[in-house]
Image 1 (spheres, helix red, strand yellow):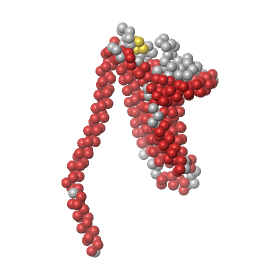
Image 2 (tube, rainbow, N blue to C red; image 1 turned 180 degrees about the horizontal axis):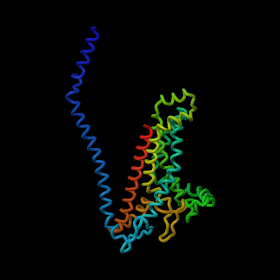
Image 3 (cartoon, rainbow, N blue to C red; image 1 turned 135 degrees about the horizontal axis):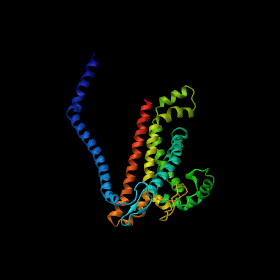
Image 4 (cartoon, rainbow, N blue to C red; image 1 turned 135 degrees about the vertical axis):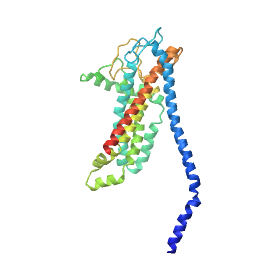
Length: 329
């Protein structure tokens, strides 16, 4: 009875000692205000960037004499100007999608190896190596890609183009080394560590009880992964893939070094084994042309499309995550 009384006295005295009543609500208000302000600041920055791009792009778009979305002409220096983004959009999307197709399976395999197959003594050093790969500067990847990787991938590209089976994406292009194929492989190497790191953390959070329950029912290790780990980490894999895709869409220096720039008036090729320019490399290659409002507005209009494309990718990711969450419930 005495122990119960002393315990109750401690419980009664603890709120006064901590002074929760006098500081708790104030702390909540301060923290809530800071969190709300941070969220509003991010929204304001995005709106400001979008408004800035639109404000500078509209005059050039109004004077443009070509179809901005469907034309492949890029002559902003003419009077009146003629420019369109069809070729830029195709090259950007094709290189990024091809890189994602290569990187995602490898990244998921690396994440599964590190979380479920690798011995503990190897997990940490391999994790460090994978993470450090993401820190390699883009210019290093670009130089390595065009000097070392492109000549070695040349025979592979020629074999694929010769045995294209009628697939337009595999038909022979107009260049040998600086192709979208090489750029996509380099992009895949660049985004793979990002996807692998994110996916690894998601797989590591799979509830141990789910895995042990599957093992208790006689499941093999692969069945445990297929029935518990992969379904649990599906939303994380989608988020990681979209994060990598966003990184690939905006890559500039490596793509600018690797891709062969087509000459003005050259025929368009939709093949992986053709050259081209992405939005980012086009703007970076021609920064010296920002000498008039019309020319500057043309390149800013291209940047605005890349801005919208990135938003569309994120919106698609959110939609996939929402649908995945509804199915899991």
